[in-house]
Image 1: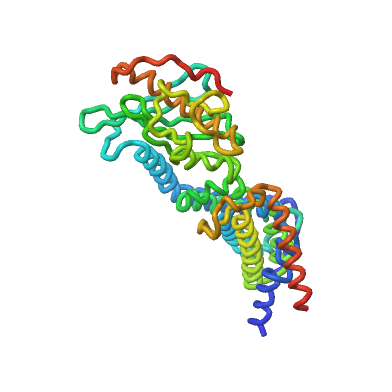
Image 2: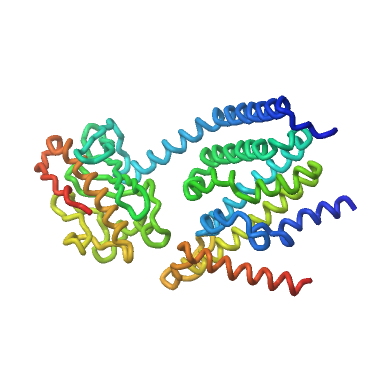
Amino acid sequence: MAANSNLKTLLNGVIKENPVFVLLLGMCPTLGTTSSAINGLGMGLATTFVLLSANMVVSLLKNLIPDKVRIPAFIVVIATFVTLVEMVMQAYVPALYESLGLFIPLIVVNCIVLGRAEAFAAKNTVFKSFFDGLGMGLGFTMALTLLGTTRELLGTGKVFSMTIFPENYGMLLFVLAPGAFIALAYLIAIFNKLKTTKN
Amino acid sequence: MAKLESTFRNMVLVLTSITLVAAVALGSVYNLTKEPIEASKRAKQENAIMEVLPPDVLIKGTDTITIEGMPEPYYVYQAYAGDEFVGAAVQTYSKNGFSGEIKIMVGFDAKGNIINYSVLEQKETPGLGTKMVDWFKTEKGNQDIRGLNGSRNNLNVTKNGGEVDAITAATISSNAFLEAVRYAYSAYSQNYDGLTGATSVENEVAQTN
């Protein structure tokens, strides 16, 4: 029973309340970093780590933090984890760090992270918060990777830098900013269609 | 356990301790990652220097050169094969890119011919300006700058009367790239013409856009 509800929490983040396709949270990194599949995946994983850690710590501390200072306290926790991720990435995956650039520190103000801390972790057990963070993170990662793959394929004919068709036939638009909006809109439409037919 | 009351004392205590713990955690991770970060930056630069110079050379000196009117210095890494001066790698930049600064490493031989280049940093438009990474070392039309000489060849895009084909649909990025290359050459020639016996070159670089 318990395992079942944890699975439900997990899937809730991936599908039912997918942060990008359903909640439409964290649009800034979603649109900004997904010019290629690997960038989307990297950003997704970095955010997943922050979500997971912040959720667990906030859930652990929820009774120690007075209500009136909860937001600053959460932000400090989140910012700490983001900075950790930033330094570790810079040290061990410098190439990815460079291509994600400013978007890494911006995870601090990603609405999903604070949103989950406030709406879920502050009210639930550590264990449940772990699954919520993991689910939300995976949902976010999946969405970003999907969007990145779509844009990279349509724009440059490659997926994860492997050539599918010659670059000359690519629609450059999809790598640029407007392409992010267009691709995202179609992905949301497809996601909604799949979701409604399933129910 | 009941939730702590929002009294002034509690709030100050809790926030202070949370920030303290965060500071300690960040400090220790900073110390841990400081070395690898430095190392990876150094490795990147060394790779770039080696990439643009002939194989089996040693860097025996670094010069920092400032050019009048330019905000930042240029770095010239002198390369020797044995005792013979064979050229230098010059770290150069342009602030006139389509978005942000472009940093490149350009290798010159002792006569001032371009051996190769490597883009260190650029934030140009993906799919357009970013092509500079390979464009100017691809043999096609007049886009290859390898082998061109800083004093003999006009390192400008053909549109501006130069000899180099600009990247399709990315003239601004191309201009910025070539600007960086030209300044790299003037930084190089300023110091090494005497050394190499090549004729001194007038600063043709001044008018760029």
